Length: 208
Image (cartoon, rainbow, N blue to C red; front, top):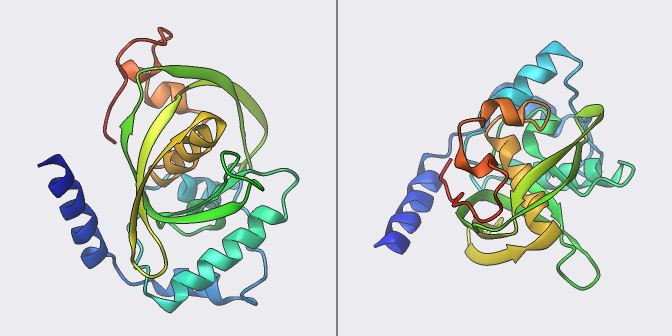
């Protein structure tokens, strides 16, 4: 029943994915498909608000989605050591992320559309995190060591996989961006969640 429900959520999400707004299209198509989009910063009020907004599902079959995906990759590659990026960080509140896969040979960059974390392990790791949108900010955060992820590609094909270790941390960080959660205020926003308790064996599974 759980699998059926999750599939239903994904299916309905794809159907209900709204078309890009004129403002979004202006950002996406202002420049070549291989041109990096500027990365939004919390120091700018308008950009900060975009980073705090909750992102909507994206239509994988929309031709503009492929352009956004390409330009987001260019944005990530233009950084000094960035390992992930989410669409809100380039001004688009849509569910798209790029993640460097340290769990795969060659550590490739891969994109994910409408990603959903369907399960998180009880065991957590504590480690440092920074953010491309928050200059000179680093902190120590607890993240589940293993997650189960569901997402679609540009053809609308759905995938499910288990991810662990540092790559799982990156996924959790980038998917937080899709819910307007920044590491600079993460503890405050989630202070009542069992997920943040220091006991690594405390149950921490939750749905956003």
